[in-house]
Image 1 (cartoon, rainbow, N blue to C red):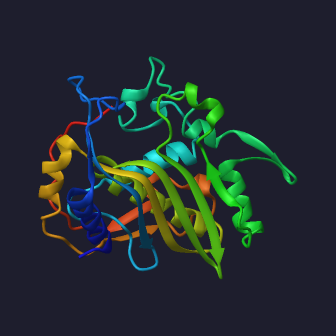
Image 2: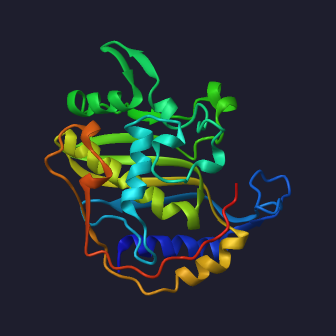
Length: 276
């Protein structure tokens, strides 16, 4: 049984048993038929994943880790806000006729800021500090730029990362304002676990702990039966996930730099409605 599966199941069960059903018609997300997408939610969920022990990849159902990495690199490496630079259709619902999602996600990553050492965007500043200022307690990113929110197709969900180095170990906190447990939890955790591993490798560090802080942690009303079925499934041991050890520059990573071995998992979940 993987530790991620255990955490996922415990979080879902707590939402279902202790969460609050929110049926306020003023909720922003809607289903395809135009009706409000209600949720059962918990506020302030914190989950921890020790990457030195195992990689947090769900086994209750399959996740395409390479597709998850492709989206992660679209934001953090390509610093793109155009879906034409992405190999999946995850963001199509928020893109305009030109493929842009506005000044969101990758766009914010690519904005340069002035530091005493020169101009850096957020990603390059993190990489610089991990190598040159590893004792700093200021190594972080934040793409929730209030000045640009009105030009974003979707406000950032996973909006902030804080990195911390302790005796050669890289730990990180992912802050997320909102988390759809069925559609996004396993995907996001795997993505940011890989990011910590990538940053650690190119900085001469070991990957440590990923702490995931979720403000509004929820299951959509129409997802509840699906989640109830998933959390009763057979569980398997966590797979082995490694990076190509020859990569020493973050900008050289590709989805093919990630290797997944011994990934046993349950059946794929059929198509389910997504609230937009």
